[in-house]
Length: 108
Image 1 (spheres, rainbow, N blue to C red):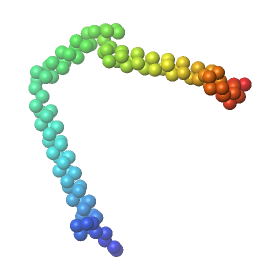
Image 2 (image 1 turned 90 degrees about the vertical axis):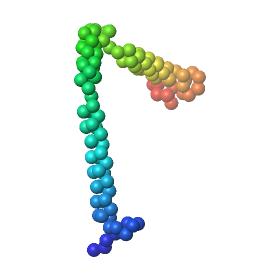
Image 3 (image 1 turned 60 degrees about the vertical axis):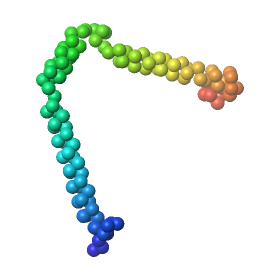
Image 4 (image 1 turned 180 degrees about the vertical axis):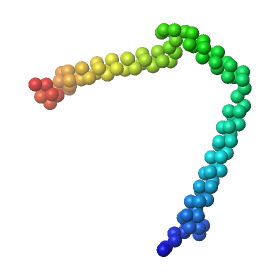
């Protein structure tokens, strides 16, 4: 059996084991940081979030929808309208302005 060696003279399996241990250590460090961050959340922060959630629930109807959602909705609607207009007028433009034949464009 031929053992492939890396640049440092270790076998590839040894190199993989070293990298895996490094990944495990990094993952443990990240998990500890997340655990510490979640432990630091104070009761006041949780209370403020709950109050904001309750005030959002108390609004009803269209006023409960955030302004960003409205803006994205209108932008999407106008893009759809412009796309439909372009697709409807493109054959007319090709025939009248560019001078292509109706057969080429696809008219019967």
